[in-house]
Length: 111
Length: 114
Image (cartoon, rainbow over all chains, first blue to last red):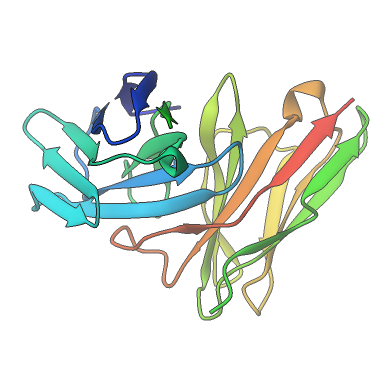
């Protein structure tokens, strides 16, 4: 089952613009991770944010987490054509090492 | 360090056959998890192995099984294949399999069942 819901499902922007993707989840979490997937290949880890953190940066990526609203957002600034991919959030729903993924956002960056 | 590797990368089988997929984790990682990705159901957790023991299991039928070897390499097996088993199978590894760790994914094995 998927815990997270991602919004929007698809996003098309021009190179240089910012892209924002949102993720909502249902239960309490210890951390939330964002992954990127190019054309049905493996998942590339982007960033992990812990439940006691509100914001985290990594290069052109900014992730926020609002545990009161059970939501997170991923901002990609100054997007590039190479950022075209699907982006997934994943949470640790239960005890153990199981990740529960959202449905993903398909991002297309037009050159 | 080398990343997570999965073999084979592509596989075509027919209904009723069985298949075995292999995953080699990052050196030093002891936890290996398996996920199935389909267009309809998205990414779903299959199971996790740690120190040769299955520690967690997702909601999949018993046709899906796995094991882990002493060197942390893992295999998953699907018996009596069905058309709906066509999917991208991803494995992920992490050092100790705790909730605070990042999981690193392999490139996946794409299985097509005809």
